Image 1: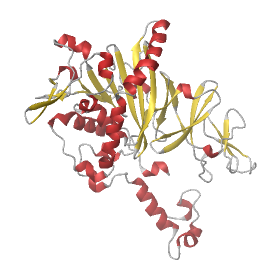
Image 2: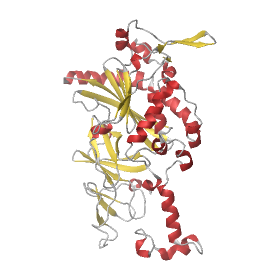
Image 3: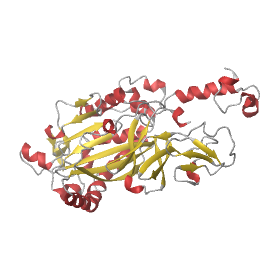
Image 4: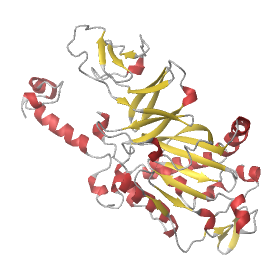
Length: 424
């Protein structure tokens, strides 16, 4: 590799001074780039799960997908907010009603712009260190306050991210350069974008990997942890302890141009309402229905998990409502749990009624009286699954078939894996 072939900003004449006698930039660059191309999970482990290696490798999430990273209500006109997605620090700003997203790292010396926000004009943001100034819409370096005649002006750019608002959420597309931005509808469950679906929600930081969030949500047996949730008496609905299945019929949605996911019609399974230990009933679920027809109004009627990590739960937390929840990767050890509840509303009065109901009933009783139990479970799982090798030490059972089917689907349809090089 010649000096001209080295990456911009690297001076191979500085090799000995920076790294010691005999260590050259060519060697260092080769080592660094090789490490950056590797996944966050070692190849030794990845090769042992060929059916879901991409999912295993996606410790920091999948690239080339849309993710919700903030509620629209949090970002006022002219305001700048920080967010973190798949390990990348991002800044958001609303300009004339439209949301823009830019990488929170100056291209000059790598400092975070958010350390001290400087927006001298509506359309730009300036780095507090040397005054490198970028356009919010294109990322173009349009001025350098400390070096106004620099030849870099107008020639370099900071990374920008496509951003879109929908149903009160701000979605950001984490994409590779040149990757065609797909429609948002390919990355959300069916029904979410329906015109009459009115959405309310809240988000919670969770100290576990995003994959644990997905698997907790789609786990057919995890309802056991909810047996004492205040949501059950509040809604007077049925909630079994688990299920007794002899077969699984997971429906895979893999059509071109649509969301890629897996559906489990849980209401059709054989529910278990009595918990036995040594032949004795030691714990009971809650059953408030007799016939299968009654069950459809007293129980959740199905769940649908799709990429990049979002679950739709039908008829939950109550009949006629739908919960949509995202497990947004933040760091290898944490994710943002975005919970929304939707109701079909035809007129403004219905929307107003539902909004009041969400904040005064569903948020305290369901999000913080039911889903908080999911958060506890995920954080408990993190100590085990936080060690990569332990993914191969789990002992799943037949009733965990849905988890394996989800991993395999995500492996096939994830559009790209977040790698260390994407954080450089």
